[in-house]
Image (cartoon, helix red, strand yellow):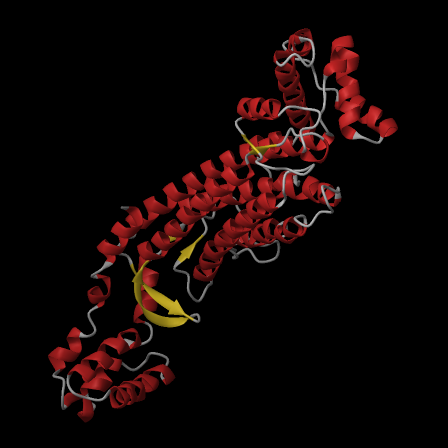
Length: 436
């Protein structure tokens, strides 16, 4: 976790104090249910909750000191609680194993993190929708392979991003459901020393569902799916970030990141305005995706459990969630303040002498009786002259002077094929599909 790329609410979920509070709640709820079932005295849970109501400070240093001796984090925590609660604490952890606490806690942390991420995506979707509607009919050039293709609108670019992040949100909701499971099933998951009712009760109290069948751990295919989903979201962030970076290039300059008063672009070149935020997002996306392969490799544990997954998750859990939270918030800010230049978009549209309308002429020739092969050759022959002139020549003028074209199409018919508005006749329908 790097403070530069972290936000407080998400960081708080992964702080040691927060983890230990979840540990206590799991132990106390389990003890409470065991008391109802008559396995332990009901006074045990009361003693735990009475102490907890005093809002005790979680003494991380003391717990760490105990762990330095025990070499076991859960035992160190239980020992620290017992030192504070007294004799009744001996009834904690009855029939449970460490993974019951650790895995259920991780589920709680991932669920709480997901709720923040879902809110982040909602904020991004709102910004994308607002800017898409603002530029619904702002003409710009569509590019394939980085080369001018045909006209689109800038609103369509943003609407596409909206649809993509709407899918991301749906996937994240599914990932939340996938990860929100509780296991309080004891050693090797057989419930030999603790009743399933305890697991059901703890799950209910923590907003989880019982794991249908665990070994000694919650199956890691759930976690693999979760982190893979975060990786997909990170890739969608990078896709939009790269679009902004390309549009901000000096030769293009159709849009750029907001450049605040007093901001500096370069220590050497005072004229620079660099896409630093979106470049940063590209890097952060790599960090989030870096969690995916380790999560996939965590699925294959030995028999009923080993701990090869444990060290991995101590890294990727907080790092991936904290980084993605920051990245989504940063991208929302980029879109919200994005500087958009319709005049430059129009200038770029006009730059290549009308080449962007070549397909309409091709189709018109075929509809006028020219074979597709011949029509393609005629249009391409003229288009290449425009291309090689770097847009100094006009495709429309060349076509009007080509006898093979004028034999089947009148000047008025040709001019109609160069109408920019033609390309936007279905924008309303596309927006209706995306935004409803």
